[in-house]
Length: 173
Image 1 (cartoon, rainbow, N blue to C red):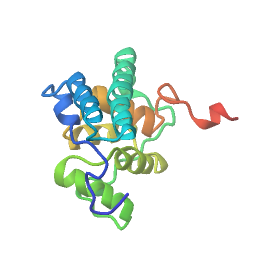
Image 2 (spheres, rainbow, N blue to C red; image 1 turned 180 degrees about the vertical axis):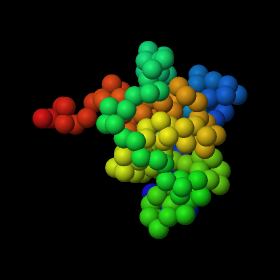
Image 3 (cartoon, helix red, strand yellow; image 1 turned 135 degrees about the vertical axis):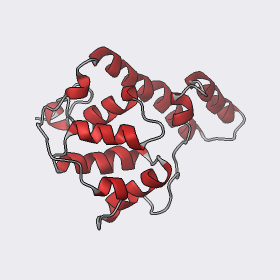
Image 4 (cartoon, rainbow, N blue to C red; image 1 turned 90 degrees about the vertical axis):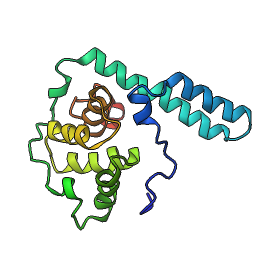
């Protein structure tokens, strides 16, 4: 993470795809065409297509198979309130402040900042998963329940007990 590099190595297409201005198919075809025309390297195109076709559709599948009810998962029983600084970014924790700043300014940040920094903070400080997911839905331009709930509740907070992603402790006891 670099301070002040809000869009480094990250697509800004998610809001246009999520509201239907672009289809996943046309975005994937454009990326493949960029590879064919040698305007993008293989590793970048592969990673991008995997995110669109793989992770995005996996999130949709989890949401469709687990709703209704998934929005209430909280196996770790976290119940603390979301701190006020999530709304104004005023904290001395530089990593958290730098992750909040672009969200407050532009309703967007990198997925590492979203899920690994802010999600990990919420998990470590036992913030309510529902308050955390509500904040994501309110603050991000590309937020929809089908995207937010599995990513936040499942991947970032493990509030679903490993339904979405297995913990390393379960793989390597």
